[in-house]
Length: 296
Image (cartoon, rainbow, N blue to C red; front, side, top):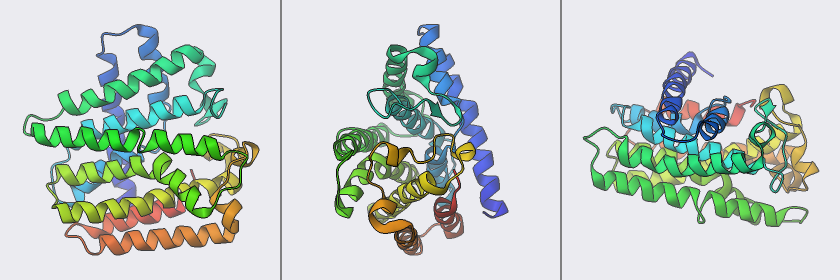
């Protein structure tokens, strides 16, 4: 990772982590609910999804301020999905980012409700917390994009497919369909949201949608690889949990070498698409490389 990308990631991560708790603390809601929401929101993480929103605005040379509430919205949805994913009825995980999972601290009922609250409040981030010069039309489009990415056609649908595939043999096409929904769609929202706020053309947005598909699948392939050879201290959860839970992964279908090759293919395709767009390319190339080489 270059100093430029490292500086960008750190500075934008700081901005997002300063804003996130402000929105929750201002809610007129039961204190235990807000405490549970904040516990998971403040548990750390890369903040990759909100940073991608800001990266697209930066790459187009636009003011990043409008991207901050949108970035917080997508991080709230990502966090709710992790809370629910860790529950005993789902993956039954005790650790997340090196800390006890939400339900281990607050109980299953409160954890479920904290996730519900994060999901619901995320939409208000876009409808009510944007700069005044962001049009109602843009806000509605962003909400619609987020619903498609996070709901039945996206992340939730992908989670169902993932559950159905446990302890079953699936094809590579089926595995990709699972992860298009479960992982790639929410990453894609971040890219598309940044492009919409940057007033990118429809042709550019569709090219960026294809780009985000490749980095989303690449992100998941790297996740699968880290589950085999990563550091538990760095990834914050048990190594080998996919195999324990009977999940098909890219390494289990393609071998570790084959998974690495497939990852390289997706990253190269993503870079090729960026090369065809009128934006600052180096930052986006570095994002691609970071996704392929990350260790957590």
